[in-house]
Amino acid sequence: MNFESMEVTTVVRRESPRIVRISVRGDLDAANADLLRGAFEAAVDDGHARVEADLGGVTFCSLSGLAVLLAVRQRLGERFAVLDAPAGVRRLLGILNMSEVLTGPG
Image (cartoon, rainbow, N blue to C red):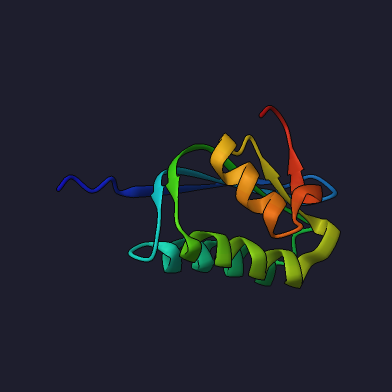
């Protein structure tokens, strides 16, 4: 079995308003959801005005990955956005009534 790893990159826009974009590449699943959760928690704790999750590089997203996105949405409300999510992730976010967080192509 070949498992794809996940890579998380964080880019912070320092000018006002402060925005952090967390880009994810690879598989987002139970094995690495805590890594993404930690990146989001650090961004929130740093007091950013907006947190963006760029999922353009995601090849697979399990329920564990969706749970992380849902928790961030519940904590940040409109200050959270999902960018460039693959079709499967967009569909699942729609089922969870989270379509409003989706922006960008897709």
